[in-house]
Length: 235
Ligand SMILES: Nc1ncnc2c1ncn2[C@@H]1O[C@H](COP(=O)(O)OP(=O)(O)OP(=O)(O)O)[C@@H](O)[C@H]1O
Ligand SMILES: [Mg+2]
Image (cartoon, rainbow, N blue to C red; front, side):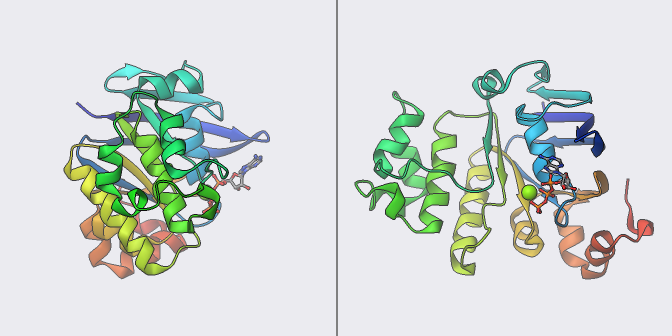
Protein backbone atom coordinates (compact mmCIF):
# COMPACT_ATOMS: atom_id res chain seq x y z
CA UNK A 1 0.00 0.00 0.00
CA UNK A 2 1.40 3.39 -1.00
CA UNK A 3 1.68 5.95 1.77
CA UNK A 4 0.71 8.75 -0.63
CA UNK A 5 -0.85 8.47 -4.07
CA UNK A 6 -1.42 11.51 -6.25
CA UNK A 7 -3.40 11.08 -9.47
CA UNK A 8 -3.67 13.64 -12.26
CA UNK A 9 -3.60 16.68 -10.00
CA UNK A 10 -4.13 20.12 -11.53
CA UNK A 11 -3.58 23.42 -9.71
CA UNK A 12 -4.18 26.95 -10.97
CA UNK A 13 -2.70 30.13 -9.63
CA UNK A 14 -4.09 33.55 -10.47
CA UNK A 15 -6.21 31.82 -13.10
CA UNK A 16 -3.23 30.18 -14.85
CA UNK A 17 -2.40 26.47 -14.79
CA UNK A 18 0.70 25.87 -12.64
CA UNK A 19 0.41 22.11 -12.04
CA UNK A 20 -0.85 20.24 -15.06
CA UNK A 21 -1.78 16.62 -14.49
CA UNK A 22 0.81 15.36 -12.00
CA UNK A 23 0.69 11.76 -10.73
CA UNK A 24 3.15 10.34 -8.22
CA UNK A 25 3.46 7.86 -5.37
CA UNK A 26 5.44 7.74 -2.16
CA UNK A 27 5.99 4.31 -0.62
CA UNK A 28 6.50 3.62 3.09
CA UNK A 29 10.18 3.30 3.96
CA UNK A 30 11.34 5.32 0.99
CA UNK A 31 12.32 8.80 -0.13
CA UNK A 32 10.69 10.17 -3.27
CA UNK A 33 12.62 13.18 -4.54
CA UNK A 34 10.84 15.96 -6.43
CA UNK A 35 13.21 18.08 -8.49
CA UNK A 36 12.74 21.01 -10.81
CA UNK A 37 14.06 24.48 -11.57
CA UNK A 38 12.78 27.68 -9.93
CA UNK A 39 9.13 28.24 -10.65
CA UNK A 40 8.48 24.74 -12.00
CA UNK A 41 5.70 24.25 -9.43
CA UNK A 42 7.26 22.16 -6.63
CA UNK A 43 5.97 24.29 -3.75
CA UNK A 44 2.58 24.74 -5.40
CA UNK A 45 2.22 20.97 -5.71
CA UNK A 46 3.03 20.39 -2.01
CA UNK A 47 0.61 23.16 -1.05
CA UNK A 48 -2.09 21.50 -3.12
CA UNK A 49 -1.42 18.15 -1.45
CA UNK A 50 -1.58 19.55 2.08
CA UNK A 51 -4.59 21.70 1.21
CA UNK A 52 -3.12 25.19 1.59
CA UNK A 53 -3.91 25.77 -2.08
CA UNK A 54 -7.03 24.29 -3.69
CA UNK A 55 -6.62 21.76 -6.48
CA UNK A 56 -8.58 22.17 -9.70
CA UNK A 57 -8.74 18.44 -10.43
CA UNK A 58 -7.34 15.02 -9.61
CA UNK A 59 -7.16 12.82 -6.52
CA UNK A 60 -4.95 12.57 -3.43
CA UNK A 61 -4.95 9.38 -1.32
CA UNK A 62 -3.21 8.75 1.97
CA UNK A 63 -3.01 5.03 2.73
CA UNK A 64 -5.79 4.45 0.16
CA UNK A 65 -8.10 7.03 1.75
CA UNK A 66 -9.12 10.03 -0.40
CA UNK A 67 -8.15 13.24 1.39
CA UNK A 68 -8.46 15.90 -1.32
CA UNK A 69 -11.91 16.92 -0.04
CA UNK A 70 -10.61 17.63 3.46
CA UNK A 71 -9.40 20.93 4.87
CA UNK A 72 -5.67 21.26 5.68
CA UNK A 73 -5.98 20.59 9.44
CA UNK A 74 -7.80 17.33 8.83
CA UNK A 75 -5.29 16.19 6.22
CA UNK A 76 -2.57 16.77 8.81
CA UNK A 77 -4.52 14.81 11.41
CA UNK A 78 -4.96 11.96 8.93
CA UNK A 79 -1.17 11.81 8.72
CA UNK A 80 0.12 14.15 6.01
CA UNK A 81 2.85 16.39 7.45
CA UNK A 82 4.09 19.38 5.46
CA UNK A 83 7.37 21.08 6.36
CA UNK A 84 7.05 24.32 4.45
CA UNK A 85 9.80 26.34 2.85
CA UNK A 86 11.32 28.91 5.23
CA UNK A 87 11.67 26.98 8.53
CA UNK A 88 9.37 28.75 10.98
CA UNK A 89 10.10 28.09 14.64
CA UNK A 90 8.62 29.75 17.74
CA UNK A 91 11.66 31.96 18.27
CA UNK A 92 11.04 32.88 21.91
CA UNK A 93 10.34 29.30 23.01
CA UNK A 94 13.14 26.84 23.74
CA UNK A 95 13.84 23.84 21.54
CA UNK A 96 12.10 21.61 24.06
CA UNK A 97 9.06 23.89 24.27
CA UNK A 98 8.82 24.04 20.46
CA UNK A 99 8.65 20.25 20.37
CA UNK A 100 6.12 20.04 23.19
CA UNK A 101 3.94 22.61 21.44
CA UNK A 102 3.66 20.19 18.51
CA UNK A 103 2.39 17.36 20.65
CA UNK A 104 1.79 17.34 24.37
CA UNK A 105 1.89 13.58 24.79
CA UNK A 106 4.83 13.12 22.48
CA UNK A 107 7.85 11.27 23.67
CA UNK A 108 10.71 13.52 22.59
CA UNK A 109 13.25 10.69 22.75
CA UNK A 110 12.78 9.71 19.10
CA UNK A 111 13.23 13.32 17.96
CA UNK A 112 16.41 13.68 19.99
CA UNK A 113 17.69 10.30 18.79
CA UNK A 114 17.36 11.48 15.20
CA UNK A 115 18.95 14.86 15.96
CA UNK A 116 21.22 14.58 19.04
CA UNK A 117 22.46 18.12 18.36
CA UNK A 118 18.96 19.35 19.29
CA UNK A 119 19.05 17.64 22.65
CA UNK A 120 22.25 19.50 23.48
CA UNK A 121 20.35 22.73 22.70
CA UNK A 122 17.05 21.78 24.32
CA UNK A 123 16.96 24.73 26.72
CA UNK A 124 18.09 27.30 24.16
CA UNK A 125 15.57 29.66 22.61
CA UNK A 126 14.82 28.57 19.04
CA UNK A 127 15.57 32.06 17.72
CA UNK A 128 19.18 31.58 18.83
CA UNK A 129 19.66 28.25 17.05
CA UNK A 130 21.68 28.09 13.83
CA UNK A 131 19.81 27.77 10.53
CA UNK A 132 20.63 24.05 10.39
CA UNK A 133 19.40 23.49 13.94
CA UNK A 134 16.18 25.37 13.19
CA UNK A 135 15.64 23.15 10.16
CA UNK A 136 16.19 20.05 12.31
CA UNK A 137 13.68 21.43 14.80
CA UNK A 138 10.89 21.96 12.25
CA UNK A 139 11.44 18.47 10.83
CA UNK A 140 11.48 16.94 14.33
CA UNK A 141 8.31 18.85 15.20
CA UNK A 142 6.50 17.49 12.13
CA UNK A 143 7.62 13.95 12.96
CA UNK A 144 6.18 14.10 16.47
CA UNK A 145 2.70 13.84 14.95
CA UNK A 146 3.75 10.40 13.60
CA UNK A 147 2.77 11.18 10.00
CA UNK A 148 2.06 8.55 7.36
CA UNK A 149 3.90 10.78 4.90
CA UNK A 150 6.14 13.77 5.53
CA UNK A 151 6.69 16.31 2.75
CA UNK A 152 9.74 18.55 3.12
CA UNK A 153 10.18 21.65 0.95
CA UNK A 154 13.73 22.92 0.30
CA UNK A 155 15.22 22.04 3.65
CA UNK A 156 18.74 22.85 2.46
CA UNK A 157 18.12 26.40 1.22
CA UNK A 158 20.80 28.74 2.55
CA UNK A 159 22.63 26.11 4.62
CA UNK A 160 26.31 25.12 4.53
CA UNK A 161 27.10 21.90 2.61
CA UNK A 162 28.17 20.03 5.75
CA UNK A 163 24.79 20.76 7.39
CA UNK A 164 22.92 19.79 4.24
CA UNK A 165 24.74 16.46 4.26
CA UNK A 166 23.75 15.96 7.88
CA UNK A 167 20.07 16.67 7.12
CA UNK A 168 20.12 14.36 4.10
CA UNK A 169 21.50 11.48 6.14
CA UNK A 170 18.79 12.05 8.77
CA UNK A 171 16.15 11.87 6.04
CA UNK A 172 17.68 8.63 4.78
CA UNK A 173 17.59 7.24 8.30
CA UNK A 174 13.91 8.13 8.62
CA UNK A 175 13.15 6.10 5.52
CA UNK A 176 15.15 3.16 6.92
CA UNK A 177 12.86 3.36 9.95
CA UNK A 178 9.79 2.99 7.69
CA UNK A 179 8.82 6.62 7.15
CA UNK A 180 7.48 7.74 3.74
CA UNK A 181 9.20 10.96 2.65
CA UNK A 182 8.54 13.33 -0.25
CA UNK A 183 11.58 15.58 -0.51
CA UNK A 184 11.59 18.72 -2.64
CA UNK A 185 15.07 19.92 -3.56
CA UNK A 186 16.90 22.25 -5.87
CA UNK A 187 20.23 20.61 -5.10
CA UNK A 188 19.72 17.52 -7.18
CA UNK A 189 22.93 15.54 -6.64
CA UNK A 190 22.70 15.14 -2.87
CA UNK A 191 18.98 14.42 -2.88
CA UNK A 192 19.42 11.79 -5.59
CA UNK A 193 22.18 10.14 -3.57
CA UNK A 194 19.81 9.43 -0.66
CA UNK A 195 16.53 9.05 -2.58
CA UNK A 196 14.78 6.04 -4.10
CA UNK A 197 12.39 7.34 -6.70
CA UNK A 198 12.79 10.64 -8.53
CA UNK A 199 10.34 12.95 -10.19
CA UNK A 200 11.35 15.96 -12.25
CA UNK A 201 8.85 18.75 -12.72
CA UNK A 202 9.09 21.22 -15.59
CA UNK A 203 6.50 23.95 -16.10
CA UNK A 204 3.97 22.01 -14.06
CA UNK A 205 4.39 18.66 -15.78
CA UNK A 206 6.46 15.63 -14.86
CA UNK A 207 9.21 14.97 -17.36
CA UNK A 208 10.85 12.13 -15.41
CA UNK A 209 9.51 9.38 -13.17
CA UNK A 210 12.06 6.71 -12.36
CA UNK A 211 14.84 5.55 -10.08
CA UNK A 212 17.09 8.16 -8.46
CA UNK A 213 20.10 6.05 -9.37
CA UNK A 214 19.45 6.35 -13.11
CA UNK A 215 19.37 10.15 -12.85
CA UNK A 216 22.33 10.32 -10.49
CA UNK A 217 24.43 8.31 -12.93
CA UNK A 218 23.55 10.41 -15.94
CA UNK A 219 24.47 14.07 -15.72
CA UNK A 220 23.49 14.31 -19.32
CA UNK A 221 19.94 13.14 -18.71
CA UNK A 222 19.52 15.41 -15.70
CA UNK A 223 20.85 18.34 -17.66
CA UNK A 224 18.45 17.70 -20.53
CA UNK A 225 15.49 17.32 -18.17
CA UNK A 226 16.28 20.63 -16.53
CA UNK A 227 16.98 22.45 -19.76
CA UNK A 228 13.86 21.23 -21.46
CA UNK A 229 14.77 18.77 -24.18
CA UNK A 230 11.55 16.75 -24.28
CA UNK A 231 13.30 13.73 -25.82
CA UNK A 232 14.60 13.04 -22.33
CA UNK A 233 11.08 12.41 -21.00
CA UNK A 234 10.58 8.95 -19.54
CA UNK A 235 6.84 8.95 -18.95
N1 LIG B 1 0.59 33.02 -4.86
C1 LIG B 1 0.80 32.93 -6.18
N2 LIG B 1 0.05 33.60 -7.06
C2 LIG B 1 0.27 33.49 -8.40
N3 LIG B 1 1.23 32.74 -8.95
C3 LIG B 1 2.02 32.08 -8.12
C4 LIG B 1 1.87 32.11 -6.68
N4 LIG B 1 2.81 31.33 -6.12
C5 LIG B 1 3.51 30.80 -7.13
N5 LIG B 1 3.06 31.24 -8.34
C6 LIG B 1 3.59 30.89 -9.66
O1 LIG B 1 3.49 29.47 -9.77
C7 LIG B 1 4.64 28.95 -10.44
C8 LIG B 1 5.27 27.86 -9.59
O2 LIG B 1 5.82 28.43 -8.40
P1 LIG B 1 6.36 27.54 -7.21
O3 LIG B 1 6.70 28.46 -6.11
O4 LIG B 1 5.38 26.45 -6.96
O5 LIG B 1 7.66 26.90 -7.87
P2 LIG B 1 8.89 26.15 -7.17
O6 LIG B 1 9.22 25.03 -8.09
O7 LIG B 1 8.57 25.83 -5.76
O8 LIG B 1 10.04 27.24 -7.25
P3 LIG B 1 11.30 27.49 -6.26
O9 LIG B 1 12.33 26.50 -6.68
O10 LIG B 1 11.69 28.90 -6.59
O11 LIG B 1 10.84 27.31 -4.83
C9 LIG B 1 5.56 30.14 -10.73
O12 LIG B 1 5.38 30.53 -12.06
C10 LIG B 1 5.06 31.20 -9.79
O13 LIG B 1 5.24 32.47 -10.35
MG1 LIG C 1 9.46 26.31 -3.96
